[in-house]
Length: 367
Image 1 (spheres, one colour):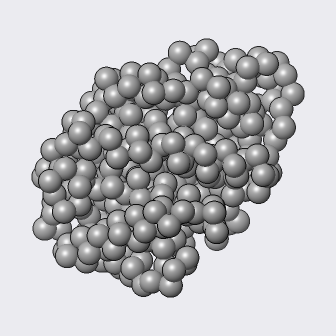
Image 2 (cartoon, helix red, strand yellow):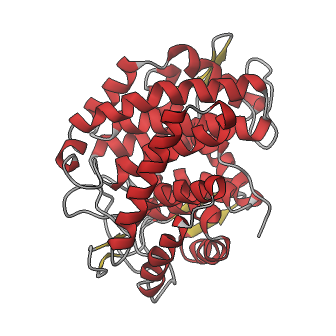
């Protein structure tokens, strides 16, 4: 991953937790979400367009994919929480517009390098589009078209087959590169397929679990961030990967998620005076920051800290989520007008997209 990806994934999320005390206008507060979410949606709905996504594509290769993928997933989060007709209709409408855009990305680098593979585009692209499709079919219910349902069947069957053929169920995102976190959205889509249609494809997740549990870091008990395709460990646990993984894992395997979250907090978190920071590398591993982690200061990484808010919400850790929001409040500079709420005055749309996603990850009950 390259530097622009870090900038787009990390800095805005730290700025997303500004509270109502910093808002210039009152906002409706959907149940379970921080203040200002409705205004964030208002801004993005009015301003986000293909030109913004293309600009993100120029910034880093997955920029266009992440723009539409995380925007759709955030709107599904909102609709599934509120059940408000306007939220449901918005999520369905946006997903139906976004999925053809995601298909077109197969002609773009880096996904074009994997276009001829059985799992076209690689696991990062394939997982993302299949989860958006899964949640569209689930939310639309009887209004889902036959074409939408059939594509979901076909792609889920293909995904299950590729997971089943793999020794680790950690599949390639790009040639020769396989990050375990990239598979998780794919497993979530198979889990939803099983619930909707009675298949048993989520069982492929057992292979991923076995691979990750057998290669856990001995010192911390945490899942590693990078595996070779044959299952050999390629890197240590890293905060940038763990924070993202732990925003998804509670929906897939609550027990292991709870164990990993506890181990993560023990080894990687530093909390003082109600504010938390998250390490990028395990204690005793002294590395400089890179394009994934962003700046690492005294061992604490910006990417790890940023995505930890979504992980804390997913794991039902209200105290830690509140501490991370307070940190975001310290760094945040939101602007709220009649047009909605945005960050950095809306000049970098990916900031607003990812801040909306991280704030709408469901706050679960504590395990």
